[in-house]
Image (tube, rainbow, N blue to C red; front, side, top):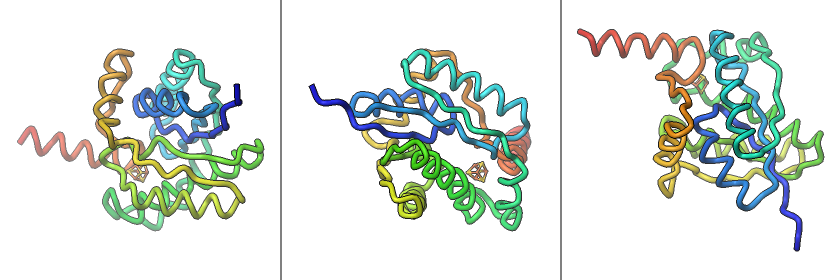
Length: 190
Ligand code: SF4
C-alpha cells in the first residue's frame, strides 16, 4: 500500500475544519495548523482553539498550534482597517496567515499546503488562490487550490458543526468584523 502524501492545512476555525479536514484526510496525510492572530478578543481566540482541538481529536488529525501574535497581524492590517470586508483588508489578512502556513509547512518538510478559508461563502476564492500560490512560490512548495464550498462543502460544514455542537459566530474574527456584525444586528433590530 502506498503512503498518503502529506498536506499542511491552515485551519481558520473548527466549524470550517469539520468538513474540510475530514474531506482532505480521505486523500492526504492531513496535519492542521491553527494560526489565526486575527481573532479578537483573545477569549474568542481561546474558545475557537478549544473547539479546534476537539474537532482534530474526533477526526484523529494532528493539530499544530500557532502563536497568537496579534500585534504583528495588526501592523499588517492597520493601513486597511477602514475598508470593508472583502477588500484589501481581507487580502492582507489571508496573506499574513497563508504566508505563515507555507513557511511552517516548508520548515516541516511538507511540500503541499492549503487552507480551510475557501469553504466560507464570505471568502473570495480567487484571492485565496492567488495569495496561496504566491506564498507557495516564496517557500518552494505547492498550494492546493480547492474551493471547498463547492460540491455542497459549506452546507456539509454547517451540518457537521451542528452535529458536533460547535459554535458558529456571526463575525469572521477581527475587531472590525466584530463591529460590522454589531452594526448588522442593530440595523436588524430597527
Ligand atoms: S473580516 Fe476576516 S478575513 Fe477580513 S480582515 Fe477580518 S478576520 Fe481577516
